Amino acid sequence: MRSYSFLSFTIRMVLLTSVGFLASCSDHASSEKSAMNEEPINEEIRYETIRVTASRPVSSLNLPGELESYYETDLYPRVSSYVKALHVDIGDQVRKGQVLVELEAPELTANLTEAYSKVKAAEAVFGASKATFLRVLRTSRTAGAISPVDLETSRTKAISDSLAVVAANAHYSSVQQLVSYLKITAPFAGVITDRRLSPGAFVGPGGQNGVPILKIKQLDRLRLRIAVPEAYLGDIRRGGTVKFSVRSFPNQTFAGHINRIANSVRPETRSELVEIDFENKGGRLKPGMFASAQLPVSASGEGSVYVPKSAVISTMDRTFVLKIDNGKAVRTTVQKGDEAVGQTQIFGDLKPGDIILKTASEDIDDGATVKTQLVN
Image 1 (tube, helix red, strand yellow):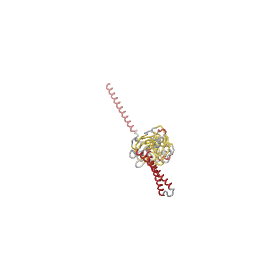
Image 2 (cartoon, rainbow, N blue to C red):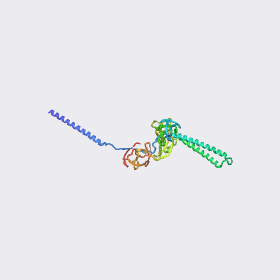
Image 3 (cartoon, helix red, strand yellow):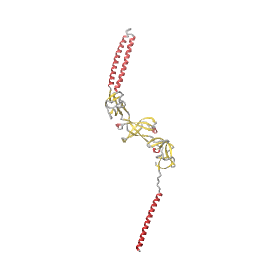
């Protein structure tokens, strides 16, 4: 009897424990489900906005440019000839007037000898006719000794022979000039940067006349050419100092002076060409190097506003920014001006203090409600 009562008590305890465990599990699951329903995930997108400013973003412009030799030229032959000797090669420093190339043309040498002989022959003929005219002139002083016709004939012959001497000398000088072209000299002091031909090559008309024999560049003086946007042309002054850097010397800054201004705006780029002179002492910088020039400009920008380039969208129909008005994105038509340092100058129904999207998107409809956050 006692064993039966003990068994019944044990069964009742097991059942109560199981029911309590199941009830707790059900309550835990119900609480998790209610928590998920009461705390929904916030998936709303917030767009970054900025406040439009009226001043130029920087007080100096970073403009790309290229270093060029102050003087550089290709050396071509001026007469048909053969390359006899090359006295210089790539990298050689040369002085003004130094003989760089010797050419040979036997026919020119023969022509020079022939022209010289014609000069001497003409001088001899003129000497004889002149002497004859002087004798006739002296004889004519005796009345009836020489007829006037003979005197005039003698005089005319002497004049004609003197002109023949002038013509012969002119021909000789022209041939002599051609012969002088057989020696190519340096037009200025510099360095040889290229050599295309070798001794024995035929050059001149009918030969390799399209290929220069040598290329020479001046290294001790360079010019840096930059294109300045139209909006900043009022800040350009002749003689102004401009600093620039090159990739070969990243930790150094070089300085030059504005020496030439084109005084003409290129319509395709709306910019003006400016040249900066640089005394290249030691020849550290080389022609052809790309440079980044810092051009000082005024920090004020009256009458215009500047926004990031990402805020402006250009389509086939128009160019616009997305202005935020009472929580709505309004497509506002603008016109683009100068672009520099990630900023774009714009004109339109926009004023300093207006709020626009920092990164505009065509996916946002005109008048769409957007959530925003100001980042500046």
